[in-house]
Length: 356
Length: 260
Ligand SMILES: Cc1ncc(C[n+]2csc(CCOP(=O)(O)OP(=O)(O)O)c2C)c(N)n1
Ligand code: SF4
Ligand SMILES: [Mg+2]
Image (cartoon, rainbow over all chains, first blue to last red):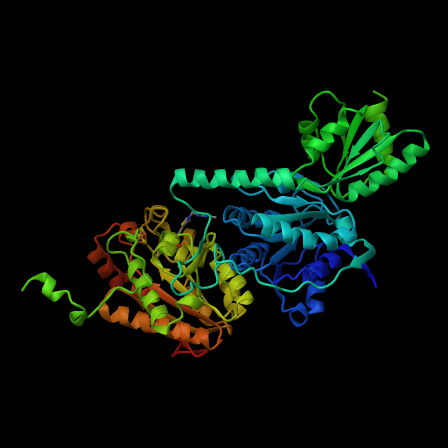
């Protein structure tokens, strides 16, 4: 029988992590994601599966606890919201440099600075263009439902270990706080990834020791390491693009939106179609790798594209890079924690794409 | 007698531990880091825990500690070694986990991680090399730099009014209920090396018994940063560092020693 539960997005990802067989969670409270750790502490997963949960003294400490545990092959995660993610960037760069798998969650809020505690998508650049120092990429998943908050805990850990790379779930305060029905799956066993090719487990007698580091003082060796990382990212780009299409078959206009904005766009499509405007939606599920090819293919059939994001226009840069100059592309979004209504989105499609 | 007649197993009185690799140390000749590495590795060898030990290297002159220490190791970002060690130990409580950190690493940028790991009573061992200076980056002022001491960022001497006071992290950490064994040692003479090694052993034994965080501070020279000959640097250390950072146990078995 299906196991159904009404849950908040933040609770769903926590339950997902337990059921995905996570070994540990390290985090620091910040609105609007504190329910992740609160749920875990209340669930006492150490009794259910042996999973460890620890409240760190800061996001800096939390990401470095993740780094330490990940270096031993353990399945570990942290979660935060925008200001906390900024604090973690040095650690994330180290994780990427040392090729350690882990799951990161940003339940984003309005910025810059302390900003607001309301939902925002203005951390797109930070998430997909680096964030920390050096040439690296995170695999970035954008859940747009509470179900996906649960499911992507599994997908996130799978991708993290497949590529030995941090995976970031870029969510927002709306998806984290809203309640929806979730179909839960079975508990996976908590099995340690015991791989002596890279994990630290204590040097076995007669074998070489393992070293986990991102340092190589020899620039020519560091370049070789960078080339290796770039090759890994290239393979990931080829294999892991995920996206979803709505009503695109007969569409004249296309929304590109992820996360909560994709939900708002779906409603705007309904209203628009009732008025005779044929609109479709491409929802990137992976923000990195970005669904550039499918978007470019669709774009050639469109009269215009509206990138909708709760930001000043960040993802629209990737939309433009993917599509090129042949199609009319605009951005619409609100900022600082304000959420556009479906009516506002539709109105802006008319104003920015149809009226011109 | 030829030298070959002397180099025989039966004449062997001392041997480099196999837990030190054959890689030439990257430290300046005369620096205390190498000796501290060796006694740490000797303790791990003598306890027979090499296969159960995971070390955390800092950022500082000992950033390449994993090149010389023949145990599984991870390189932390600057100051975060206690958090990295916490992540490892929480997931692998049965392993021995240690950090090896300089004073800039432990007492400046990593102060929060150090204090909170100690306050949680993380069952790890910290080896803390206090040379009163940032060796790695060319001899800048550290939180532990002595009053009036000249460094490249306190070229007229550390002025307490504008630059703050030297931080006695070890005494501070000893106050926390989460620490079990806290001691200050040095490695500038054979007698002190023996004592420091005993202290490191005690720290790992305390970790073995899950007693909480154990910390061995080693007051050490940085002859390059101090701009002295190695021997002169050790004499200067005895005359100037030890009065401010007195050697000896500060906390044993969870109890403060003497007037601490
Ligand atoms: C985030 C960050 N800030 C600054 C540095 C530069 N840095 C490297 S080592 C170091 C000081 C190390 O001093 P200490 O911990 O006392 O070690 P020592 O070299 O004296 O043994 C600094 C500031 C860095 N690597 N990372
Ligand atoms: S700079 Fe100082 S601490 Fe670093 S290796 Fe040289 S003497 Fe030792
Ligand atoms: Mg120093």
